[in-house]
Image (cartoon, rainbow, N blue to C red):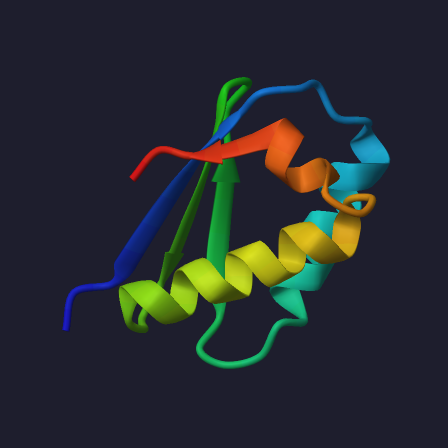
Length: 79
């Protein structure tokens, strides 16, 4: 199976604490592990799992690190 890839556009600048917390939540998120890379405008997540599962785990991580509903205003899925 090809790894699932999920790209998200960054709509609003985030403090470094948010990025640190997101990296921690992703790293502690279980198996299989998710890799995360970030550019100034995009975050890319890759995992050896199904596309739906990767999207669900990423959404859960973003909801954990952002205030209620804020992740929907700060990030937008590209794919």
